[in-house]
Length: 121
Length: 107
Image (cartoon, rainbow over all chains, first blue to last red; front, side, top):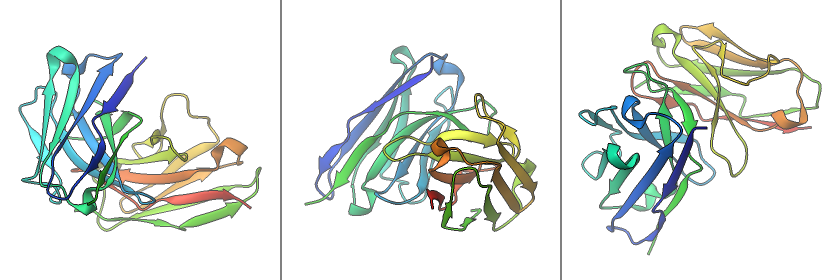
């Protein structure tokens, strides 16, 4: 059974940092690209960042470029998102999502339950 | 960036009725790489349809997707109580973008 479990969310002041983690199981982590998708309270979905299966290629939405860094640790089956210089508009539930496997096509076939990030003073 | 516009914003229907949800793209979606997700309150989205018309694993056949280019439709032939939820479309021909969602609520 495929499982994705996020952690690391919480309350942080504007300008602060947080590191999100997503531990996966049930599939060969090193074979699939992964992404982070967020959802502001009561709003729609926004793709934030993606990383290739090897970790060699990373992608970011313009809204987070230069502030967020995505990474993987294949030895620990873990996807991470380092978030710096956080803003109020970054407040959202952050989901990690597994991509389906076709290179260059971010179709998300499995999602974690999400972790809430709140940026507020 | 491809912008996806979903309509209507809210659909009020009764169980047993047919639901038709629309997703319009600002430019043609390459290879009809259009997906639909269902999301219930407090839950993560769940993949329902991909490639515009293919059902994901375990999705009942009352759900069908159609369309091509810039206009796509999700149809639920007869609403069951568990189908009342928010549905998002997503294009994945390049970087992923999502529509704003359609809420299917009980009338």
